[in-house]
Image 1 (cartoon, one colour):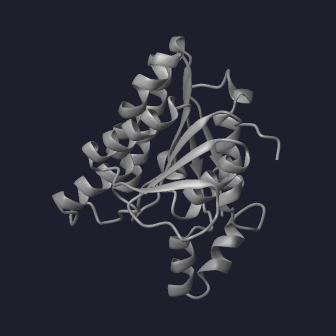
Image 2 (cartoon, rainbow, N blue to C red):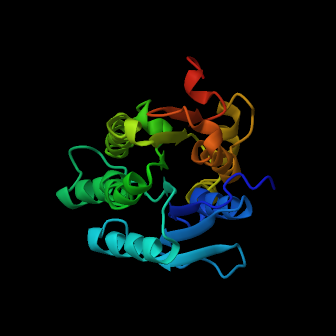
Length: 246
């Protein structure tokens, strides 16, 4: 490892599995002190990450977790907002509760974390926030409402905060993954035989992405190597969103 995050303190949400777990592990290997937040317990493993239970939709719990991290480590250099969940429904059948759940998990929770870490970043005059958005924040897929609404909002939040705090040494960027082999996608393939092959055939590289590939992009954005990249979204989908005809 090149220790690209040596001396930095990083918070990663949704760190118990998938992209969040891959990111937290990679950051730890690259020298960061990593606090992983998730409402599910992380598997027992010596991954170099300090895992804590926290629900990103609970603003008080988020504030407490961030306060504890700052009290213990003295600073917060990096935030990766990865936690979220699919909420798909017919628009006219969608309940108010499910609408609120989608927005809370995929947009408002990220804002809770941003709002909580910004004072520390402002005080030290530096910081990098990486929001994990989605290709759903760029292209609309029928049958996936209201998830794309939240992800469009997350990209908007990224750009707005990036510009708002650029002069204070704080960068805010997002990553929009396409089809990535996270547990919920593996479960989908298990439920629907043949789906894996069909989805793979749609991708220009003829393979599905891995959580580690998203994690390495987050690592770059979190590091000082990306110090002039701000208010920008990077799509990681193997080129799928550029294909006009399937």
